[in-house]
Length: 101
Image (tube, rainbow, N blue to C red; front, top):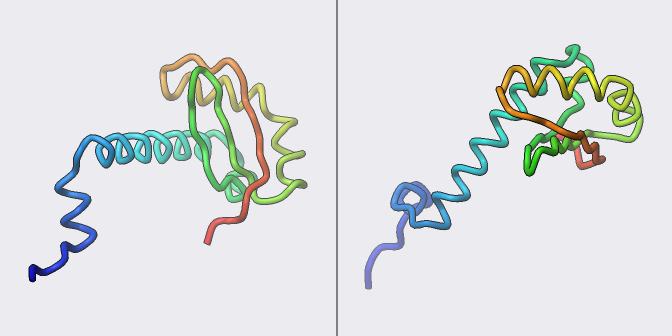
């Protein structure tokens, strides 16, 4: 009987699916950094997740009141993140999600 591999061993060993997941996670983390940098501190703290796919920036926000506040700055946010990341963002979608732990 052989010793089971640790999570670190499994992730570092990779494979196509793990590599794709790692790439997607890094891209989402980068998008979240750019979104938070483009927002005032109080709004940035409410953003739980961010991702860009097919020209759409999708934000996960902790609560409906924060989502409503973000909708007022959507166009400014779209332009700032688009400029800072050097990609075309055509639209922004805001979803209410569970808060960060």
